[in-house]
Image (cartoon, rainbow, N blue to C red; front, top):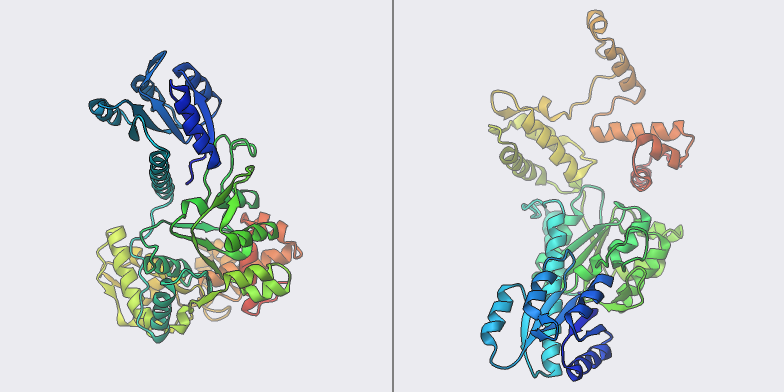
Length: 473
């Protein structure tokens, strides 16, 4: 984060002019104040990043004003200024919340050091606030598996991570693209910097730009304060842009500039901000096809695809399912506190025989459900996995008595027959989405409203089904 607005509160006019002139040469806005009352008036008009506050002023003591400043919800970092020999006073000011202390007289070089320290501190503070506001991440985020495909992926990650090249991660839904991005960051020389992520499809289009680049106060309705975007937060580290294909064309143009120049402006601002960020993007779509359809900029695709990384589907990772299943079982046993002993050999066979269209995410869901539904013997049996396809129509009609006791069974049986009795939850979801799309006569907006999902989520699902050979147009 850069220091952009400074309030200089000093009784000596020559000192105010000296520091203000130096800061303005660095394109920093400066408010000059000769009294505490002037400082109070300025702070009532807006927020500041940094305050240089004299210890003694004509209308009061700076240390008392420091306490008032620290009560503000949006407070600047305060650097106290005092005369030689006031070391004890400096210690007292630090104890009251001062960021630093400058002994007068001081040079411009000392001011520069203060600025750098303040920028670094603000960066750490903002990143910590951002990360603590996010959902807790799974601490067990290692890439598991010993198959040839998994080992090749790990080897590629280690090799690419040592560079600063932009990376494009491609793979089906649920394959673990975010885990790959995390591994890329952990193995890089940026590992001590922040790892900031943004799902480009998870937010309304009008908010994505603000999330990426930040905004200035008053730039739009609701922008009550200046806010740093994800690129600023990721300075010195890595930014992970998931579902990059969902960015609108205007935003793609702005992202291209960041990749080329490593600079941007906040929404509603005119100050150019430079960042040192490594960009890792991910998508479940084939961007080459999106380029051909003019849905994705070709020049941005080339900028992103410097190093392509393909994450294999679970069905391509021979032998990894048992290892993953065991690891997930142990994780969910700990999370839910249930006395489960493990999987039966028949269950492992069933897991290995499944095609896993939902990949690792589907495997996790299946095993979490199985752990929760585990029987009294403490072992997970095949029927608890829910992978067995229900009987087709005519292969085991429900007894008449059962139907009379539960009329809903007639509806369930008819629905299962109508959709071809899907064997997995993913299949059931697909058939329901396609059926609703047909009922809405191909109108995707109306289909999304009917299903109560985001239009981008619907588009992602339909693109996935199209790749599987389903007629979705």
